[in-house]
Image 1 (cartoon, rainbow, N blue to C red):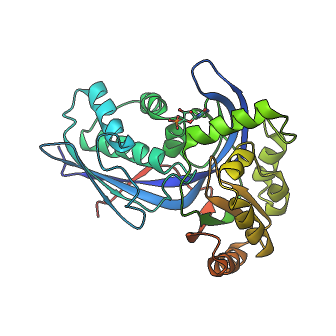
Image 2 (image 1 turned 180 degrees about the horizontal axis):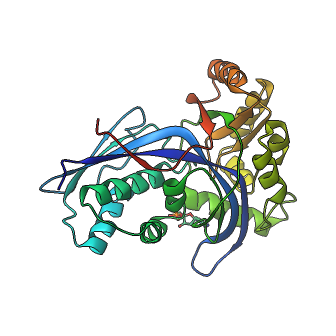
Length: 305
Ligand code: C5P
């Protein structure tokens, strides 16, 4: 056995998030276009006498540091499959916003899977790792694959999407997180109460896929869409102000990221992103403001810190 292994895993946003009906298993059928962004958690796994979890980094506070953490569950799931000893020391260097709609928990699970597989020299076929990932959470397979991908089913079935160049984003992180199940429930409630005219449902986002392949940010911007946005805005009405502030600061478009409450603003280029970020930071609408670009690669092994 080696002394340890570290995986670096990106955050994600959904350039398109179409939500279909509630299924019998409690999940909603999705049609989503995932994009991995250059904001990373590093997950290190080392041999130990007990399963332990240490969280470091700017977003360490809100993360559960016990066996309920998705990274710990990932290690247990892989150990059950390979027969290895699940007692490892996991360290997560946390930079992805917590409960922010950017798949931070899923990133940590994907990182733990990749790092533990390396530590144990488990030679699993990629498809098997993806199956374990899908059991852990709907977004975990995408955290492994990264890039840009069309997600269907509950989000776990992935098809890579052709993309050209990189897109520049500003992320406005809210001071209060949102629970993903609560946002889906709110969407169901809003749909029952009356029609939401902009619902995309499970239609495939063909126009957006063509735009991503062209690399033309001005074609992409008006096509960004999120069916969960009305639900997130209903639970956190101040997000309307955040979205307005980003557009007024010069972003081409702004959407709630996934189930929120992080707001993602697409900018014309990297200079524009820096200027929008500076203006948003000064406006006081967000707890933290970050710039990021994407699509970037999914989870990968890096030298240990
Ligand atoms: O798969 P994951 O654990 O990330 O999902 C968290 C919760 O989000 C689910 O329990 C469900 O309430 C909701 N969800 C959903 N439909 C999806 C994905 C998630 O309703 N496609």
